[in-house]
Image (cartoon, rainbow, N blue to C red; front, side, top):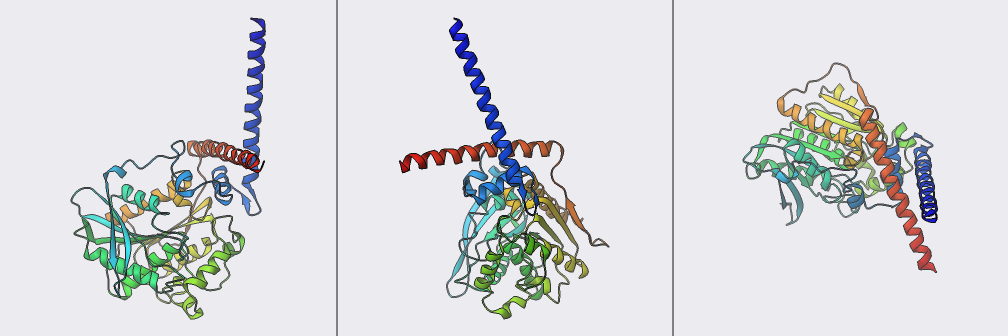
Length: 397
């Protein structure tokens, strides 16, 4: 019996030692990932960026689905999903994905324009399905997401003309979809944010449809060369958008330099921003597009457009799409939902002073949750890296 106790004691001590080593390894790894030349990252942001930049996860599978760190929207089972097409000229058409609540309605309508640098292979309905679906479930709106044509095959103004046609199509088919044609808003992220605010201009310039609101997540607002500190500071690509991709997008989508100054590509420099719908603009601290989004918000304010702009600290470009694993992403999503509901209730007004509101990193139990989840994700990432290294070693041998 004595030898059994000795064995169990040794096993216990060995197990304790291994667990301690694992914990230390994970904590040291997170500390390293948090340290960047541009500043110290929150733990959750650091592990997500490490995973993405080292190709350790499939964004459509690993990041958005794990039950240990995410929970679906409880109302999603009440949504109806439709895949349709919108006709264009010359017998062409574009796909459109629709999520709408069950019931008769009429429900408010939101058009969502996906991001992706205006180029094929960088974004589409599948990469943005989680955010499109979540907006529908949280707002109770009919959400219509058109897959506008992409560069380099289709240059400006194809994307914005397709997107405006989708708006007209939504108005004309509102009753069929159970939607309210008198309560239509537009939303978009990154390149899609550019398209959303450009469509707002087009609707004004072309006498309709009247829009209730525009919600822009970290939008591109200029194709011109102007001094923007955030573009220089966060241009490496580590924060999910690089200067090289922005230049590639400009060359593909707007190959002629005369296009760069057009108000439908660079709304930041547009001469007329009056009579546009109330806007919510959300920016990220570690994002090359941060400054132009906030500058555009200021120009809207100066034009008399009710605008609210919030900078989220400690996060990167595209963070709202990570709402399932990032508290700040959830907060950004909730802010957009509340804004749309306030618009529908008629409770959004112009403020006298322009202010960039700053949303600090999560605190309290939300901070604890983010840190716990960051540790869990780091364990998974390190375990996956180790497994792949072992597999490669045996394969080589």
